[in-house]
Image (cartoon, rainbow, N blue to C red; front, side):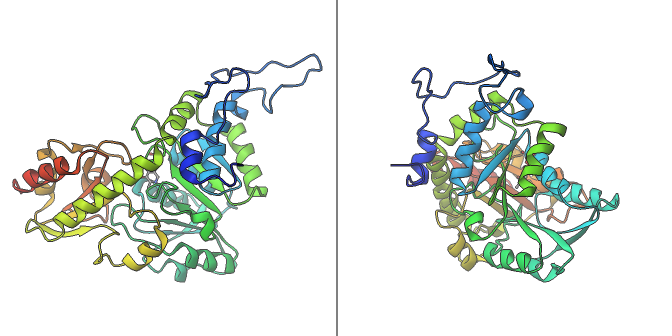
Length: 377
Ligand code: PLP
């Protein structure tokens, strides 16, 4: 059976069924060398002579991610932010970018910074992102679905059609769907992005970003060149840890989804809460799109709007004893975060919002912990 025919769980668990040709090792070796020797004909043995141009550990991780996202090729970077802004760097001067208001705040802030410098023009859109695309002008439509931290769900196929009609490309931040429950490239996106720091590595010990392209086109060639000349690929040890994380991606992700659904249901009518925002709940405003687009669970991310204020929401986080009060998402451990504290006073995020990344622990421990912390509100 070729890798093409294997199902994603098999691809992930066996890392494309690759074993080390030199030794037969089932666990991939790690290639730390920054430089690669030339042979008697003064040719390199592999398609690189220097680590900035790539190395076998990097390529194994990139090939695995490209296969999981059903893309043509993948590029890994030393952070998610680095990956996003290398893609933005491929746009022409003052190229028009459309992005949602509700998205990962650091990426939004940097887009605004680039706009202020005259590098791009920017429209930050509400839910109806397609209506802000300008035919002939918009170059990049960027969406995040479900989006941080309000978990709006965007119809990828509809936005892809609108973007392509206008001559723009569509990039999708799919960090929270983790290649498991949604494959944006199959719905028409041109680039799918992951902060691999999150679910793909899954153990809160690697910082990295991935761009996976639908096609190996001119833009992809520019990205590859730009990374080699001005930046760097993800370092070998991080690639190796990422590969180790990917092996268990599906079991981890599904357990997080199951835990998150149980928690969302349990707390959905809690007297200390105004609302539980989770795409898997039938009262979520885009639940119908989520049902269609998230084919293998509704993810591990949710937010609570508490019946309290800024200080009360912070105290709630500090009162948790099993769930850790920390930023980030997608690890085995559950995390809770008061987003307004992190994003600062100009953030549109409500003061009473607490974001959860639900991990793979026993769900009854998580529920009991959240109950005891809510009792302090
Ligand atoms: N996109 C999303 C949805 C994120 O949550 C993050 C990080 O929190 C990023 C992008 C940026 O990724 P990184 O922190 O790996 O640079």
